[in-house]
Length: 172
Ligand SMILES: CC(C)(COP(=O)(O)OP(=O)(O)OC[C@H]1O[C@@H](n2cnc3c(N)ncnc32)[C@H](O)[C@@H]1OP(=O)(O)O)[C@@H](O)C(=O)NCCC(=O)NCCS
Image (cartoon, rainbow, N blue to C red; front, side):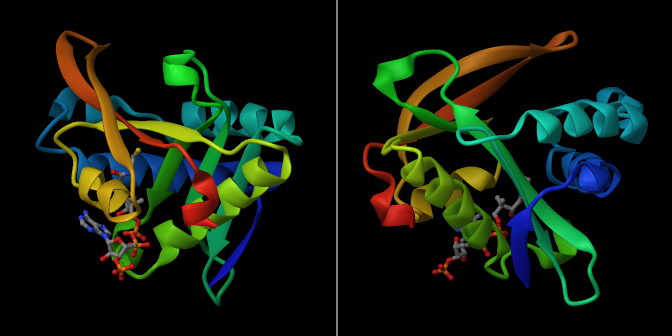
């Protein structure tokens, strides 16, 4: 497994991992109609823009299997809401279903936090679905539940949870 910085040409593969993972991981939490309406093309466009913007503080990494297929990705940068003075944030972290629980998520978190740490950031926050299985993963990596907050996904109010690390050196 290779973890490397994402290129704009990776946007389509990243969008596929993202949409497919939403559909498989969140089917019991988010409505079928919303998940069915997710568009590879729209997400590809968004991810292409985010990859273009990545620099010292913003990052985008992909995990590639031995055949060169992208099986996971992470994106992030500065923390966006000023919660408890956390400085860095992982905006997205997804591993395609067949590859989950093989250490790929942990490798991506390590790459992300490594870049943040090199840029002088030492604390991290991220948001995840409060009912999602990823909470167990973040707790395993030493994350502390900071706050729960509902976000509207179309007509539904979905509860999200923020996990924080006061010192990201434990993730490096
Ligand atoms: C959450 C996710 C990113 C984790 O990545 P992963 O590659 O499956 O996790 P890893 O294999 O790197 O796991 C690292 C450690 O956490 C543990 N772990 C993984 N998922 C876990 C879970 N759901 N609950 C508890 N522990 C978990 C692993 O057993 C492993 O422990 P070890 O170091 O003792 O062996 C991935 O499963 C995923 O994309 N899930 C669906 C989408 C999602 O919810 N993304 C997060 C959105 S914010």
